[in-house]
Length: 195
Image (cartoon, rainbow, N blue to C red; front, top):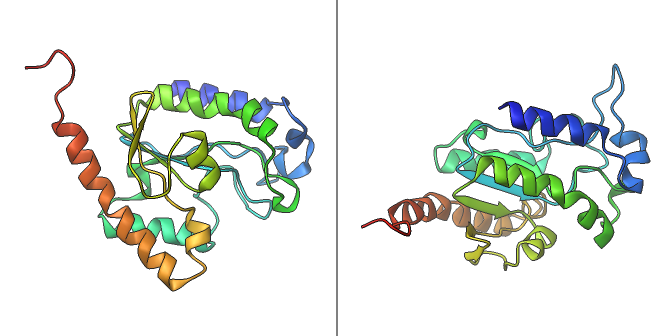
């Protein structure tokens, strides 16, 4: 999608806050570092994580690294017979913080314009914030469906957090299985003006 490609160019050249100055967030030749962009083609569901890990490799959210959270997300997609390309995954903040220090509110304020643009371009039927900070941004609570500016929101814990303990891992996958049901509910609702 050309609009997403144009947005990704803007993201890569962004210098709006201090995070852009870290080497891990600067894209240069012969490196797999830089700001992390959203990834996926199927935009019926958009997943929004917090920000990329300091220790990650690659430019795309949940695509290249084979760490616990990435594997759990792929396992959950497998559990509902979807592939990674059936969804769009992005971050609320596109840059890593120094050695994964917590984000500050001004980083979210400076960067959320990009995720808002991604949402406006994809117009998803469901937004799934991954983690407490994205859940708070969208005004939701973990594992509780709600509405936000006309979008259905279903916040979940971040898969990296859940991948550390078997109990949380199983809960994540069970809650993930609710996503297709939510889409069926959304698709069956009459739009305003329909009879």
